[in-house]
Length: 384
Ligand SMILES: Cc1ncc(COP(=O)(O)O)c(C=O)c1O
Image 1 (cartoon, rainbow, N blue to C red):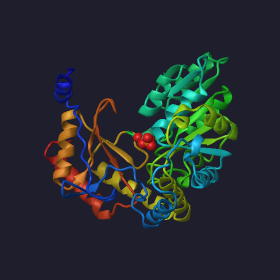
Image 2 (tube, protein in one colour):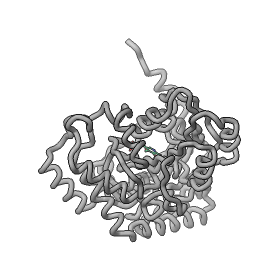
Image 3 (cartoon, rainbow, N blue to C red):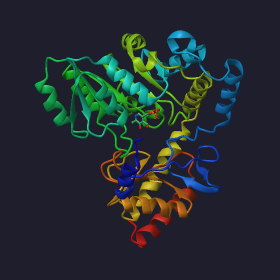
């Protein structure tokens, strides 16, 4: 039989071995792992909606009416009026013509990028785009050119040479491991000037930027027929799944051609109900986003006061850059020993190892103070 022991040993030697640490309770500000309570700086539950009472009530109602699974693909009998309602709600929230739900951000990226581009197309993709975009590009039959991170001059250089081919520019709006923001305003101008489609991954912008509505709103821009936005329901929205939103023509085309939409079971109704309730809460309670950003500022100020390098971060995703994998692992262990959960992120997720902190609206002043104190100790004993 095949053995993967050597490959596993090689990963271990290079400090790249991963292990799963499961929780014993809900996602949130404090999580329990192996009986230990840890202040959680590792979730994408930016607004604290994963365990919200009115969302749980909405889920219970949907569950008792519709049952558990969707039971079929959306194009068969998998959809419910809850799916339709959520799509209408998202179109309204994002000020777009139409929306369609996918079962995850990963499959939305793969299924949309592959459906919209063809063999004679060119995809221009930021070098730090998420793995699901990378995989969507790999699976597409189009030619893929990677442009330097957020470098609009480099992007324009490539666009200038490719005036005649159909093109799509693909970018995360918030980069998931560095927490910096793409220059969406300049990229939109380039897409317009060079007649390209613009595909924006709003996974970490949804619920976070532009009053929760995302990067276009943040930059004071509106949607346009050449813009396709992907947003996840799994991060600030606190459920699971994703959406593609944009022109009705593109959404209709995806419903007809996107393989990860057609050939998979629809999202269960209770997850859909959770997402709808979460979006209503985001619209009704802007103070959550305000708190998120206040906490983000307090954390960054604390880290900078220790001389910690937070890279290019501009959002609640705050990397702590370290010199190697071993340091990242030791620092993550030090944090756990001191009651804080923030795992090490290493290759191939990132090129340079780091601890990726995510701050949420649920964190308290004491949590942030504790984090900074523990990091100060780590710095003083040479771990940073
Ligand atoms: C930028 C980005 N895009 C897409 C995804 C995939 O989303 P999901 O977790 O819903 O599959 C993620 C999350 O891991 C992400 O960070």
